[in-house]
Image (cartoon, rainbow, N blue to C red; front, side, top):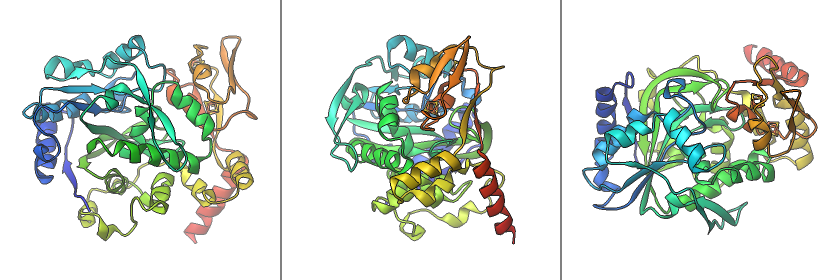
Length: 388
Ligand code: SF4
Ligand code: SF4
C-alpha cells in the first residue's frame, strides 16, 4: 500500500501551485524519498498535441515548474518531454513545446526540454505485447516522474496516470498500436503492460487536476474546475482517487482491467487515502463520456464486442463547416478510414475502428462524435429504468 496525497489549488497562480505541490510532497515524506542526488530525471508530461495551457488538455507548465523548483534542490539533471499524438520529430515537438508553454519551464528553471527524438525497442514481456518501442528520454533516465492532466477520454473514459504512459511510445507507432488493439479491453491491457514495464523507473506520478477537462476529451472537451493536485507512487491507486473526484473509478474500463489483473483492488480500504474527505470536493455535474457501457462487453466474445462497438459507441462525423482539409486526421488514422476529398475529410464508417485519434488530433475541432440510434435508445431506456 502506498500513500496518495492530494492538495487543494484554486488556480494556476505560481505561488498557489507551489504551495499545493509543496504540500503533496510533504504528505509523501519529501521528494528525497523518490530521487537521489544527481540522478538523471525525466519528467514525462502530457502534450497530446499543440494546444495552449488555457485549453486545459495538457499538463500545465506551472505545475511542472513547481515540481522542478523542488527537484532542482536534489539534482540539476532534469529533462521534460513527451511524445505527442503526431510525428515525433524536432520540428513538430518544438511547435508543441511552444504552444503548450513548455518553453516557460526551460526559461524559468534548470530543466531542459527533451531534444532526443529517437527511441529503442525494449522487452515489455506483457500480457498482450512482448516488445515495444520506447522513447530514449525514458530509456536514458535514471528515474522518471509522470505528470499528467486529469481529463476525460472519448475512447478510454478518462486520462490519468496510467493512460499518460502511452506517450512513452514514439509518434506514429501509437497509431499502429491503435490499429493492432482496436478492442478497448485489449487496449487497456496494453496500457497495463506499458505501465508494468515503466514501473521499473517511475518513482512518482502527479496529476494536474486544478482545471481538468470534461466531455469530449482528451482535447476537444470543456475545461472544468476540479481544484486539486494529486500524487502517489502507485498510478492505479492514484487514478482511483482522481476519478473518485467526479465519477465511479471501477466503471472505467482501464481500472476494471487493472483490477482483473490484480494491479489494483476495488476494496478502497487497501488504498492509503481518506476517501471521506472527497465528500465536499466531489464535482457533481462532471460530464463523463459514456464509454462505460462498453464495460459490459469487456469479457465477451470478439463478435459480440464488434456488434457492441458498431451500435453502442459513438460514430465519427466530420463537421464540413469546420474542416479545413489539412489531412492531419488522415495521416493518423490507424484504419485508413479517412481521406481528403474536395478539401474536406471524408470517413468510411465501415473501416472506422472508433479509436477517436482523429478527434484527439484535429486542430480545428472538426471531428464530432455522434450517438447511433441504438445507442440513444438503449441509453434512454437505461436512464428511465434508473429513475424508476
Ligand atoms: S477533420 Fe480536422 S484534421 Fe481532418 S482534415 Fe479536417 S481539419 Fe484537418
Ligand atoms: S476515422 Fe477516426 S475514429 Fe475512425 S479509425 Fe480513423 S482515427 Fe480512429
